[in-house]
Amino acid sequence: MKYTWFRSGALAFVALLAVSCAKTDDATPSPAAGRDDNLALGNPSGAVASSASPTNYLLVKAQYTLSYNRDQGKPNWVSWHLSSAWLGSAPRQDDFRVDADLPSGWYQVKATDYSGSGFDRGHNCPSADRTSTVADNSATFLMSNMMPQAPQNNQQTWANLENYARSLVDAGNELYIICGSYGKGGTGSAGYETTIAGGKVTVPARCWKVLVVLPVGNNDVSRITASTRVIAVNTPNDNALSSNWGSYRTSVDAIESATGYDLLSTLPMSLQATLESQTDTGPTN
Ligand code: MN
Ligand code: MN
Image: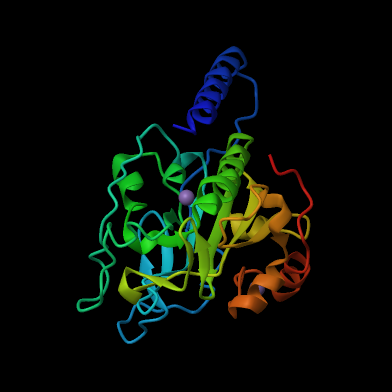
């Protein structure tokens, strides 16, 4: 698996930590990373858990929270917390399946609905971000967490960004991540499509992600300041895109303008204005 180098590196790091902790009992203990509120930075679209809200339906799982769009057969956005408390050794389950938690009568996208379309079943909340238990990993394979994603985007650009996010966890951080897709029409390995599955699933034009990076600690939202690293990325759902996710960095404001959402809405307005107008220029690997 492509993540093996990364996970074994993480295990070696943990082993090293264990050894160094065993040798020094006078060190100040660093705060333990926990599992925090997946929606701590707000509900970007004001999604509600009512079948009367079919295009902006709030679906809360233990592992992530999302806004589902029944008419597009995919999420509008998915929000989750990432820390070492979510990471472990559970293997990738690959049990793609319908989400029976959707309101009765709604079409449930099937594991085979993307077959032969030229688009991957692209995770919003990644499998590798939920490896603490088999149940947590399995939850990421619900089709309500998938978007039709051009293979080069999913397997290269997006995967590189996902790997980078987990490397930030290994470096002592915890993250809040919100990602989603919008627009209609993308180019997969079999050409341009606006929908798949007989029209039941919309192929988005763009896939975006916002990451907020904090050193491990408590009361996360209150620790976010004007100098907190915020990474916003907006990629074309086009198989010809670059594998370098850094080249698609933009501002949160630009994603808000494109989607109509209010991201990071639990932060004070003045702090949102500062953080959301910037484009990240930090390292990308
Ligand atoms: Mn993926
Ligand atoms: Mn905002």
